Amino acid sequence: MPGLWRIAAECLLASIGLGVLTFAAFRVHATTATAALLFFFFIVLISLCGRFATALYGCILSVLCFNYFFAPPIFDLRVHEPRDIALVIAFSSTGLFISLLVSRIRERTAALMQTNEKLRRSEERLLEAQRLSHTGSWQLDVASGVVTVSPEIHRIFGSSPDEDFLNAEFWINRIHPEDRKAVRELVERTKIQKTDYRADYRIVLPGGAIKYLLVIGHAVLNESGEIIEFVGTSMDVTEAKQAEAKIRQSERELRQLLDLSPLHITEFGPDGSLLYNNQAALDFHGVTVDEWKSADLHSLLHPQDAERVLSEGLSKFQSGSPFEMEVRLRRKDGQYRWFLFRFNPIRDEQGRLTRWYAAATDIEERKQAEERLQNENVALREEIDKVSMFEEIVGI
Image (cartoon, rainbow, N blue to C red; front, side, top):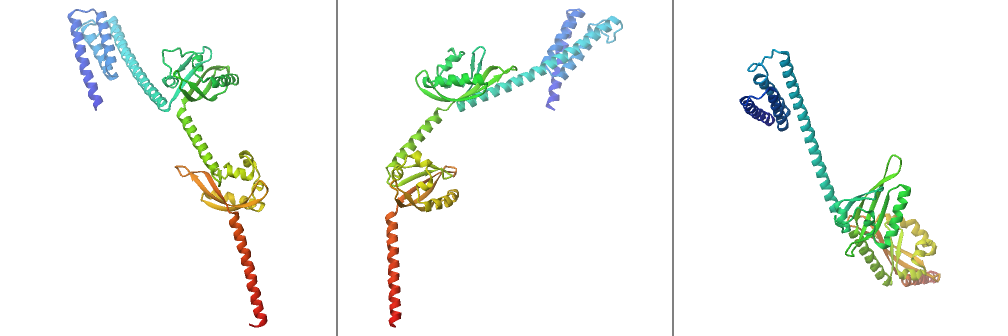
């Protein structure tokens, strides 16, 4: 209903406008050609301002006004002369054609404006996404060497639009001197192989600050298979690199503390793979970390214990629950000593198992004490048995 009311209002305004135009043209005694031209302008105006139904109404009304007031005989809608009939038909056809053409142009223009608006909004969202993710896009024309970049690239590199950034060398010179050669070689190799590439390197800002970038480039080929341009993205991963460095520093400090412990501290992967052994454990075996990782289990444990660990260890790691094991470790002089290993899982915030830590305590003296106690118990039992037999013999 709102659409019908709008069309009705447009038709009313068109009638008033046409009436004013007809009255003015009639008062100045406009010729037939002049009147036709004025009515054509009116039809174009109505077609531009209103809907197609309004334009069609204005066209029909203009034909009637032109035929009645200006096409001979005037004040008569009937046309008698063949020349006048042809004039009215030509005017009517031209008016309808103009209405249809202008309406189509309006529709196409409106659709184009809507498409442009969608593209503008998409571009704004893309630029905002690039700003939030610290990811800029770029394009390199191979033939001209001209580089086109998004605004986020300028923010990442600390450059300004008034600098000569169209030259590829401008961006290459921002790469850290220690990384520049490797990046050049990678790009040249990519041009020869005509493949995509991925690179991690540092850039130096005008103030001396250093940033870490993750760059992905895609080679665009023409029909002949030749590279015509590179398109890609550059992501600022400085914060992630700094966080990784802090984590590595924390791990180094933790391992330094573990190396100070007299206990044997061992780090395993979630599947039980060997990751780290502290210095006390390495000194006990007389090996380095790399030698320990590649060593056969039988060279580190007593053969009997090695077989037991191989048969039971995997299931215990898969259980994800803390557990204990008593094994004999082989010392660097070939002697074996008993150790109690306590295994504890480490989980992340989502509860996923990330690694295992095991603390081993030397229990050799306890084992020897247990063995002596057991031997003493056996000896005592034997003495008791002898006394019992003697009593039976003598009949006490």
